[in-house]
Amino acid sequence: MSAPGPDSGGTPDEVWQKFLMDSEDAIRASAPREPSARDRTPECRPAPVAAEPVEAVGELWQPDDPEPAWRDLDGRARFRRAARVLATAAAVALALTVWSRLTGSDAPSGGPGDSLVERVEEAPATLPTAAPAPASGPASTPATAWTVG
Image (tube, rainbow, N blue to C red; front, side, top):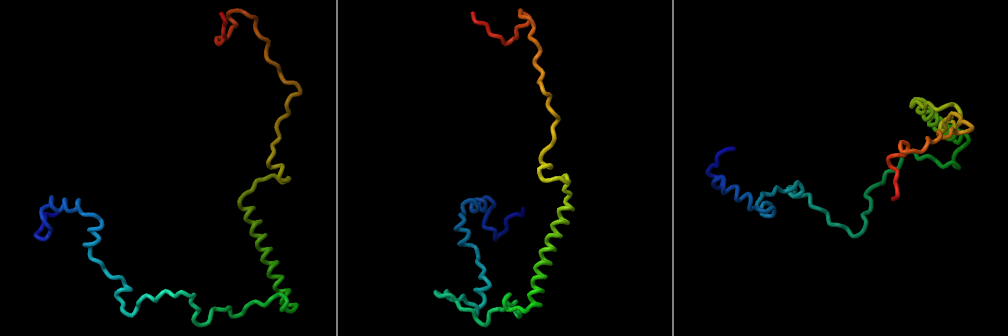
């Protein structure tokens, strides 16, 4: 930090108090304002807002060679257009096929059901039963048994 100079506005404590007391509105009011580029240029004034929609000035862009409708084409042109559509569809199908091969789908060659179901080992015809209970007595009573007295 530098020491306060003759034009700094006072001691550091006074400057700090002024900083604490200033509000945002006071700072905005006292700050210098630079004019915008539009304000600095005298010939560029904002146009008045029109109540009606503005018509286009000049010619609107039109494609140089618009494609004719299907009914206006002769036989060769129809064939070329149909071939273009089929070639595009074939290119998309080929791209999708190559993409699916490159992503590494390791699905089995069967139908979609084969990839979702796994074969589980066969369950035995009869299920094993629990072991016979030991003879009753104080040693065979579980620790959680309740007695009513």
